[in-house]
Length: 212
Image 1 (cartoon, rainbow, N blue to C red):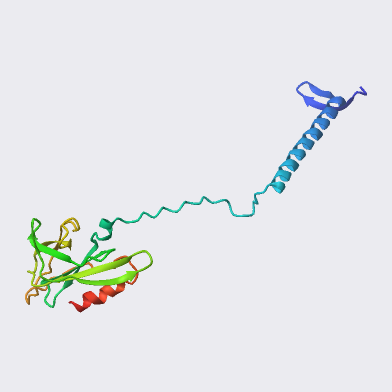
Image 2: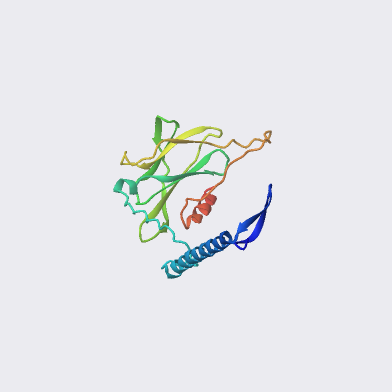
């Protein structure tokens, strides 16, 4: 019985366990520990010698800048940023129409009417101002104030060049305010918003304020 160093319990009683099995288990455990330790050291060595620093910020994807596409001559004079503002000392009788272009249009004007298919050239001349300019372009803004309108009415209008039919806006419409009446105390709501989306556009606010 000198070959047996330990014993284990079974359903048949206590059975001796050969000591040679115990030694094999110990050798296997030691070998497994050596393999695991070696693998960990290899990983640490790879991390230490890698050119990527894990403490630094992760790499970021850089988006290529969108190419700047120059505007055509037609696009430079195309009416854009069309805005409306109530005008006139008497409610419902005036409306200021404003629009802009990247190149000055000397004969920029306004058409108006009560039918979308029957617009006449407005007698009022459009005022031209420039609120913004940089090294790339200048923005020219036009203001035309209609007067003598009928309160509570629908009007159609378009803006653009008086001499170039291809350089005009689509037909839009607006509703004039109601006339003041002593027996009418119902509320009246309007939406006020700004601006033209350009720097220095705040100057359009005092302009519309002065024409009211």
